[in-house]
Length: 97
Image (tube, rainbow, N blue to C red; front, side, top):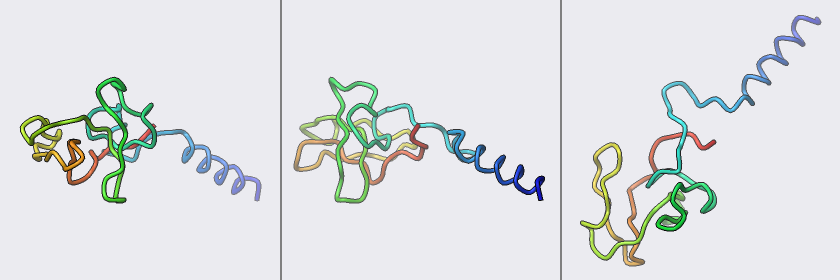
């Protein structure tokens, strides 16, 4: 019975260790990374954490036209939305710290 308790404790500690799922990198606060607050974004003077269509929140930057928005790391184009923010289709795939 004691060995089962130790196994359960070990699994619980491993789950809380902050490791990202296999194959998913940790977010670094880069452009289009998911975020919860502006502090999750690397460059808070040029980037902001913004919600998009109640679907996701991501680090973004201002724009005036589509060509102002860098592509995502996977090569997908990003558009400049009516609020003058670069809006990706989805946030980058990474695990928030």
